[in-house]
Length: 61
Length: 172
Image (cartoon, each protein chain N blue to C red):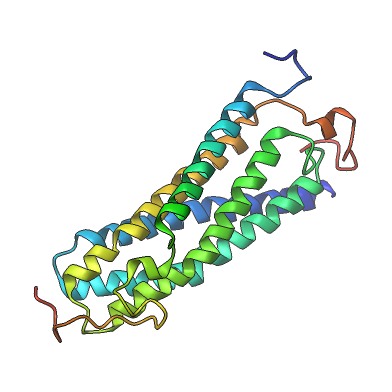
């Protein structure tokens, strides 16, 4: 561990490692999935339009 | 800053930041209700509520937390880039605000799906994982920021070690 007052504290290094891992995972998800955003959650063909019309006119339950 | 202004700025920052944390907790509960609810009307209402909470509570509190935090840092001896805990908190705040602003688009799409009576309950529920996951992550990030603000772990940045940014008040 660095001497008091100099160097990077251990807790900062831990935060940097965790942040780096999360950033790496986010990049992998973006590259693998290709679509992380509103369109990912909506039905085919409706991602750009914003409304979802799927099949039946009412709720099944 | 004078002591009176410093206390006012600190009060504003704490109120905005803790308010943001509480609002995210409320958002998470509403999102979970949308995911697990059995009543179609209740599920739709939860999605519409999420949009209102996002635009009229989360976004204002996030921006207020960021602005008051920067004012608080620059107006006190802590500085914005002198102490690691302030820098980490700033990074978390900026990232959380940016993700929130980007995510409002998704929330808008989810609300549109809820408004559309042609969207079946099963599909609405399937959409419900995203806000739960995002709100859960936001809650975690804001809790970490709160812990940093309370404990203020030691450590000066290279900028702080060189004595940079010492123009603030004598005490935090």
